[in-house]
Image (cartoon, rainbow, N blue to C red; front, top):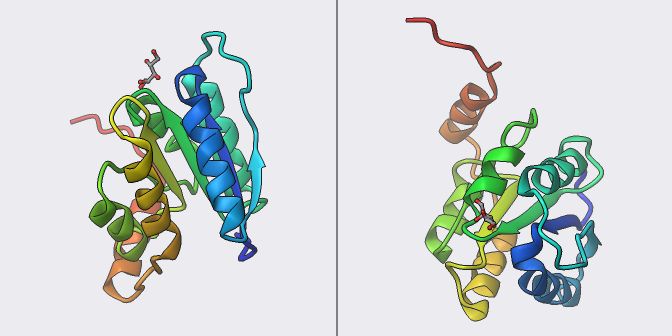
Length: 153
Ligand code: RB5
């Protein structure tokens, strides 16, 4: 994991405009933004964009990732399939703060068909400024990180 203020952004076709607005906002806050697209509005498949962004975080290339689709849900599910990724969908600032403080989330997912621009930017700010609290929460995060198992019974 890198501690540098470098963040990857991605989305599907539905959320290009909001993603670019968020990219500009974050850049003004002093983050180096790695926007991996897409940039054209043809219909595309959110899992590949979610996993591509997740790879940048899991590899340590970027400290955080922000991903978007219509609801934020599908792209979040795809990102969470990448080992080491803890991504939550947030539609309020409290949850955005808490997924950092308690869950040590390294990715945030947003739904462009759920949120207005102002709330989306506030959620981004809450996510980026909150710190992981460690302690008992670290034990729980380690439990999240235990290898995925297929339950048979
Ligand atoms: C695309 O129409 C839509 O399915 C996608 O943006 C997202 O909402 C999926 O979870």
